[in-house]
Amino acid sequence: MKVKRFFAQSMAEALKQVSEQMGPDAVILSNRRVDGGVEIVTALDYDENMARQKLGDQAREATNGSRLAEMQADQHRLLQDELSRSRDRIREVREKRAGVGASYMDAVIPEEPEDDHGFADLTSPVKSEGYSDELAQMRAEISSLRDMMSARHGEPEKPVNTAVQQRLAERLQEFGLGAELATSLSHRHKAGRLEDGWKQSLKMLATGVRTSRQEWLDEGGVYALVGPTGSGKTTTIGKLAARYVLRHGADSLALVTTDRYRVAAHEQLFVFGRILNVPVRVVDESHSLDDILDELSDRHLVLIDTAGLTSSDRGYQEQLAELARSHHNIRTHLVVSATSQPRIMKSVWHCYKMANLAGCVMTKIDEALTLGESLGFVMETALPVAYYTDGQKIPEDLHHAEAVPLVRLAVERLKTFKQQQSVAEGA
Image (cartoon, rainbow, N blue to C red):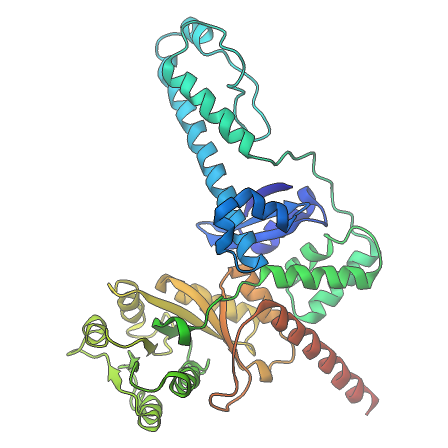
């Protein structure tokens, strides 16, 4: 099994690199947002049984294939980080020796060719008695780490834009994906029928969409929903609260709102509180968010509603900073309407990402013509999807998100959309 990590500014660019260097059979072990872009860890010839053997006792924690792949990706990151640190230490030693003189440098630390990872081959026999103990120790360290790395990669193949790939890219764009992401996915289909490429692209999309493994209602904690006005934050909190009360009762739940900027902004949340017999607290000049959360520390679940402010609104920076600097472990989630345009989704994400987003909630699924736009958004931003909503019924129209069912729902929505188009054209 060969594992490799890719960095790029966008998910589409990262997938393009995967397609060019790993080919159509690569499996995505993990994807996440990092400083400056995204990171994808992929594998060729992925074997779950082999992966469990390599992880040993740690594999017991993996209750499913997704968790196993995530653990293996984490292990691969650690190995590569160790290799990077070793390379930096070698560079420091060489630079330090360089001050002594070029002749001494040549005698003590001869230049040696680098391997595929960019590391000099320091495992060859010592050529001079002047080798320092420090460098000799690093030789053994590099040798050990290199043995643990299994990836060896050849020259990348240039993607060929065939007729089938072109048709596949068009179908993926009809599905709702952006042109760049659709093209990247289509280029992974090297040969074969269009339907095979379609199934392969959907499978990869399901792999790239991250979801939360555990429900908030069972895990507990403090969760804040942020997003623009009309995205469905308060209604979603009402659905979550109602479902929690039905399962666990009202005694261990509390609702909080930070919206002190608009007239009558708390009314809907107070209505939910009265119906469910749940306390509702308001953050204002006299009661800070941390003070209120300190008082509610005995509650198993606390849901925080926020004002739908944009970057130009008064209090926008203040509200997000209040969430980010809290000494409580607040897991902030962005509420994204599936009816929004992809460009608007990204703009909203840029506005709210300073709140240390832990994931997102997709709303108004029932009102969207296609769902590819939403799936492409969460794939490119690497935001895990916690829940999605598809109606106004409380709490029936709230669903814990899972990647494969979401992609299937998006396919069904595309079929319905095409049928409606055909009927409209016939009429």
